Amino acid sequence: MENNKTILVLNGPNLQLLGKREVGIYGVETLDDIAEKMRKRAAELWDGAELVFFQSCVEGELVKRIGDVVIERNFDGIIFNPGAYSHYSIALLDALKALGGKVPVIEVHLSNVHAREDFRKHLVTTQAATGVIAGFGSASYILALDALDELFKKKSNL
Ligand code: DQA
Image 1 (cartoon, rainbow, N blue to C red):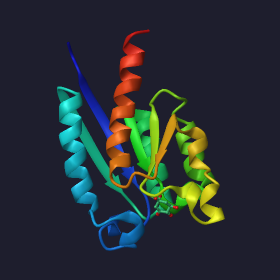
Image 2 (cartoon, rainbow, N blue to C red):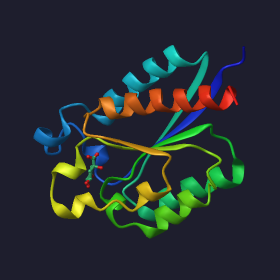
Image 3 (cartoon, rainbow, N blue to C red):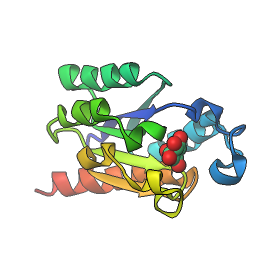
């Protein structure tokens, strides 16, 4: 059975600093460490897994990257940690909405944003996500792969 999956892993502002940034909250692992773990898990889940990583501190670059997926329709799923943009970016919300629900989007957060400052409890981009996983540190990203796998299985059974 063909089981190729191409997944876009998007990370927003300050996530390039993982491992150096507020390690008590975000942990000691770097984004590269997380990418490595994700590649291993993806290879377990799917025969031909391809993960494409993109990180930017610039809102417009993230908007553009999602827009490219809308145009090219070249990904089976998106895993997205919008960082602080999660709490206020209508531009990112609109970009995700432009996917029209055709590409599942799992929003991830390393920290449990609901157990932190009040301003982090308000999530804007999540409104266009298929689901959200928060509070499990780097494992949030691995759980997002598992969540995508569940969605793919559900879809193939329809
Ligand atoms: C974060 C949570 C956000 O509130 C914060 O601005 C981040 C990281 C997380 O992964 O826990 O940059 O998205």
